[in-house]
Length: 208
Image (tube, rainbow, N blue to C red):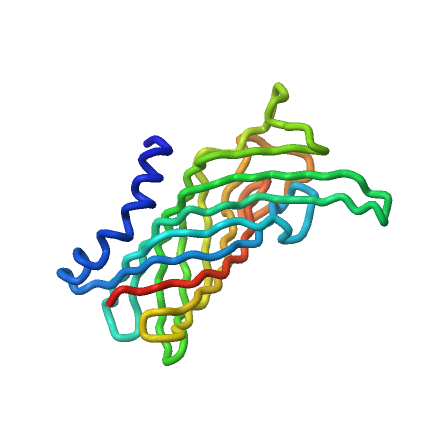
């Protein structure tokens, strides 16, 4: 599938929710927020790279306490290191990776909040990497980001009003996000590599 196809789905997906879901007894909504991200294994620690988080979702409540939620999101991730002249550190680094992700979340509902967890597949839309203002991806042998990634998501969802609320979640890679291993790689679950980590705060509006 092309990048234009994913963008088409992301843009038009939410507009079909109110009509289609009402007829089927499901619910749906749209969401938008910000993510703080880092790349475990790139030797730069800290959630210093900010990115957008946008998308839509459909949900199915199969009991009064539990349900499933399918999402389509646009997710900006990466890593950043800024110079620190006070410590004689003049090095800078920037890594941007943009994905369309398809999370499938199981939701357990309580009176005031919802616990959610599940996997998501990510499809790379674009990438950019520079060191000290030199574009790294221009060099031969560049270790390109993988085209498809797999993540685990865990979060909490709260309703502020009947149709409006906010969602806080973590999003962590389960597979190496690079096409090959590099120095500084870390071990995660079953492989060495570099891994996207994100903390996401988003607001959602749910159609009833």
